[in-house]
Length: 346
Image (cartoon, rainbow, N blue to C red; front, side, top):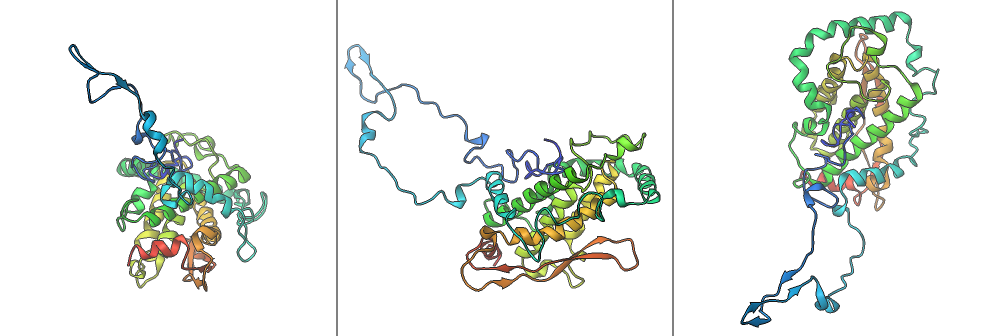
C-alpha cells in the first residue's frame, strides 16, 4: 500500500500513512535475508559428475543434490529461532500481540483516545475551527512546489529520514533498527484502529480545489498515520541514543522531534491531512509509547527495572502555553531489546 511510511519499504506506509510495503522494507533493510526477494530462487537440477563414467567416448553421469551422501549429515540442533533470524517486518507484526496486552496507568491501546463522539473525536471541533483548517490548507498550496520532492521521499521513507539524524542501519545497529521498526509498526497499527473509530473524511473530499498532487491513501484522515509513526520513532530513538542527542532546551528542541513534526506538516502541505490530524496523532503517540516500551520483548524481565526518563510531547503549539501530553515512565531491565539497543551506542 502506498501510505503510511513502510519500513522504508515499510516506511511508506503512506498509507499507512506510513508502513505500507513492509515486505520490502528498506526498513527493514534492503538486505537479502529470510523471505526477501534478494534471496532469489534456488533451483537444483542435474550436474555432471567430476569424474567421467567413460573416457572413450568421454562421458559423465548426472548427479542430483544431495544424493546418498546426505544420509550421514546432521541433523543440527538449533535451540530456538533466534531474534537475528527474524525480518523486522515479521517480528514487528508478532510484537503487536504483546502491545495489545499492555496496560500502563490505566491506559490500553483501545483507551488511549476517547470513544467516538467524545472529547478526542474530530466531530468535537467547532464549525469555525473546521472552516479555519480548510482555509489553512488552501493557503498551504503555494508551498507544494518547494516541498514536493521532500514529501514524496517521506511518503514511504520515515525511517530513512529519522535515521539521518544519527546514522544507523540494520547491520550496524540491529537492535536499534528493530525498535525503530517496532515504533513504526505500532504507529501504523494504532493509527489504523483510531482512523476506523473516528472515520474522518480526507480534506479533498470536503474542500473542492485542494487538488492533492498524489492520491489520498485508502483510509480515513484522523489521526495522521505519518504523524503518529514519526513521533513514535522519535520517542524510541530518544530512549536508545546517548543523552547528548537531546539539547539543553529539551527534546522538543531536538532534531528528532523537529523532523517528526516536519514530516507531519508536509502531509498538510500536500492536502492529505488537516492540522488537527497531527495534533491528535501526537497525543496518541504520547499515550501509547509507554505501552510499546512495556512489551516484555522490549523491556525485559530479569533484574530490577530502571525507570525511563520522563518526557512530554507538545500536542498543540498554538496557545501561549502549549498543550502537552506527558509520556508515562516505564521500567527497563537488562535482558530486554531496549537495553541491548542502548549498548550499541556505547
